[in-house]
Length: 404
Image (cartoon, rainbow, N blue to C red):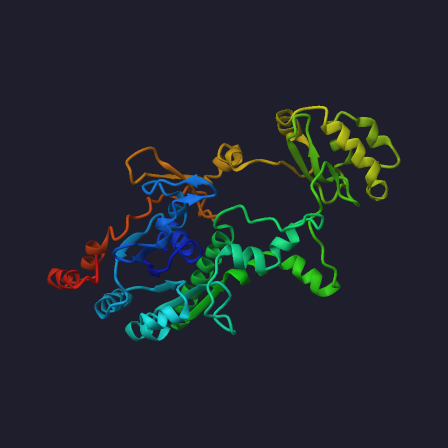
């Protein structure tokens, strides 16, 4: 993306996450923020009971690393004039403001295209850019998690209330990647045809796609399934799929969808090689027909040793499995580290580096190099001068409060 310039007028995580991904890929992402308060998310200083340091604001760093910040008051004619000057020299306009706000402050597609007919216009929204609720806002907790059916599907029917999302910016981060992919395709399309397109991604469409395999099944069969209550044991038809508790209450997830070729390996690793000779378990069809009995064998075997033992011991098992880890565990996971999934950026406070997660795409096996997120309006003068705007004009805009 080197040489691609993105003009971002967006807040919170969903759409800014797309800008963060594009910045990881080398684009110059210019983030427009209010000259006084900045992105509203800068003010989120408590997440899930954890107090965030404004100078080490991890929720803000995640979607905004690698960008430059320009402070513009888009409610003023002068601020809109500045925005149009920037848009003239950008390839992509990226926004998640509601349609009525875009119209009021004159940065909807017709306004930006009037300044630059060749700009790609990318919108992120709660519920989509069409339909009776296009002007309704939302967050991933409302649109991605609750309205989409994900919360309902993830919650066991035995519980009286739905599970909460639990992970901040969960759908936001997934959807941001979708927007970045759409922008990439739009850039390719423009390169091949000369046509600048507009694109839309919503949190609701993000959730629908992420859940698409099950939604298609429901549409086909009319059967709505929900997560079962957690416990130690295998699936009703395949005991080689399930969560098994260790002696110290850790959990090993077996996900050997096709046991063929793996039956002996698993039973030997679990210290019960005789089970592989048992006619009830020795071949897949019999194993499925006697899933309950096989699950009982596995439950008893896993309960003999602690979590750390199984993490080491199962490395040579031929089938598919995983330790059920915490995010803290993931930070030290040898595979995550080997594949550069965690990157470091400097802290705005000059302290220890901040650990962030790189985007899921890796180019040529190389680690991502990026910088911290900008302080609000940190690059206003620099960016405007790079765009060829004279100092006298910058001073005049400053005097009117249009920029910071």
